Amino acid sequence: MTGTPIHIALTFDDNFWAPAYALMRSICLASKRRADIVFHLLHLPLTEAHLDDLRRIESEFGATLVWYNLAHNAEFDAFVAGLPTSTQWPKVVYGRLMLGRLLPETVTRVIYLDCDMMVRDPIEALFDTDLKGFPLGAVRDSVHPFIVGKRDMAQNSDLFDYADPYFNSGMLLIDLVAWRAIDIQAEVRALAGRGIMDRLYYDQDMLNLIFRNNWLELNWRWNTIDAHAAHEGMNPAILHYTRKSKPWGIMSGIFHSSAHARFYRHVMTNELFYRFARHRWQRWWKKLLRLR
Image (cartoon, one colour):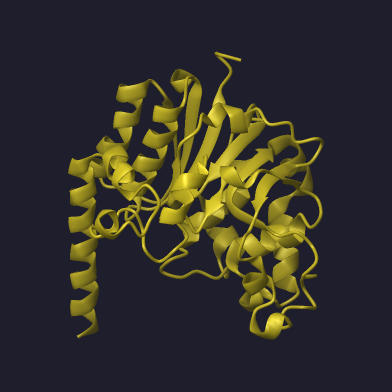
């Protein structure tokens, strides 16, 4: 219904502000209910310039931005301590496991989205999906055999049953009432107590263990994994750029390695696209010089 808030949560740090902006802008461009959209932004410290970029979503579309600076959250720091991280998987991504604690109790449903995504269909259609009593809805991961089976499809057979459906956690439609009742943080601590954290694929494996056979499988269009050029003809609703090649890469639009790469650049806006390219280039040189 028009006027009912559509809650969407993102997690990112200052090196991913531009894809976060592109994701939010794609959501607003595709929606007929832009003023109803509420973005809950779980982030680490952002520069003032990057904050100004993100605030443009409010002025252009009338959507609402709610900020959660996790750098000043002692509960978050205590929760993520000891959890596995990497350059690709910074600690801020674990904010999605705390959505039930961080978001106001008045928020009873939320869509979580990874920032390496672009939305092409009205997000309200996904938000209004009947979860049929399940605590969350998600899309089955198309490459799950390699995630759960690892070497010889047997390495983690004591943790996962290959025959069980396994979801990608980049898009989650969450019933926060049911989510809060489960106490995700306590479940993660229990997994850590089993001494298996170094065998898990970050929080995606954690969530699949916690919600094993307790989630609703949604249509693949709402999380088109490994989105490359061939997917363009399949009319995906949400593109998920899980491949090494990303649509914000300078050459992506030339070689069409990512689905709708040229469209993505215009969604991010050309000015921000090239500014983000300079930001990544400068980071690369700084990292290289530190290694020498």
